[in-house]
Image (tube, rainbow, N blue to C red; front, top):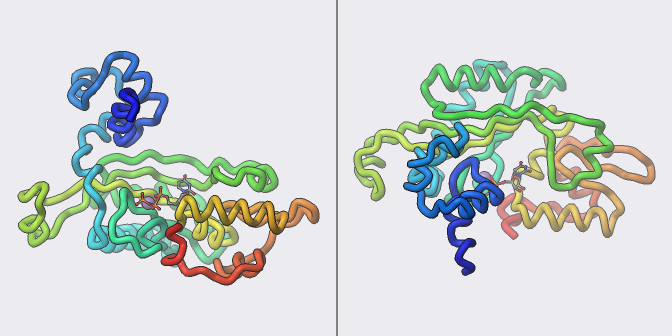
Length: 265
Ligand code: UTP
Ligand code: MN
């Protein structure tokens, strides 16, 4: 590996650090995590938290963590807005046993009800003492056709969080990394989608990244349709397809339905 690439990899593992920041730190002579700890003025709030919880955040998230998190998020969402739903996405929906974070998609069966929901969910979670850090990103909704042109980005309202997840005593005893820990820091993404876009959001956020890239390429090249996490667009008719499930999307693309476990490409 190229010498600079080694530090780039070390630094970009930190929550909130991208390639450009990592390269800048390298040029400034920083080489270790301790170098960073000695230069807190160089760090954003997000990076400070990332560094503080670096050990936990570089430990794989387990399936048992996911179940506990889902329960907590469902409770907060139910309190914030009765009828709103929480769906596990990302690698864990594909059946992976470990992950680097946990991704949840939130919606409500009545279009528009999801507006303003996320700040209330976050308040409930904070009241439970479950949040170490969160960063809210507003919906960056532009025109639907403009979004249809972008295949990689999405504009959903979301919260990038670090949860303070209580660990059951049994796990703490058997745990190898931190035998006495009563909690651990876990990265969680909460994403809110209106119900009309939910199947596209679910498909997109379930991944894998490679599978989605291939599916979108297939859609554009073979079918002349633009697929992303907001919709499926026919650029000739200038219309969006209406769907109510992931199965509908596969059908419109002329493909056999693939369950999440088979999207690990
Ligand atoms: P992740 O990066 O969480 O990957 O994105 P993963 O498959 O769950 O694996 P882990 O977490 O490393 O174990 C999940 C899916 O969400 C999409 C990605 O493209 C991927 O398919 N995604 C992620 C978005 O659509 N938008 C984003 O802003 C982030
Ligand atoms: Mn994930």
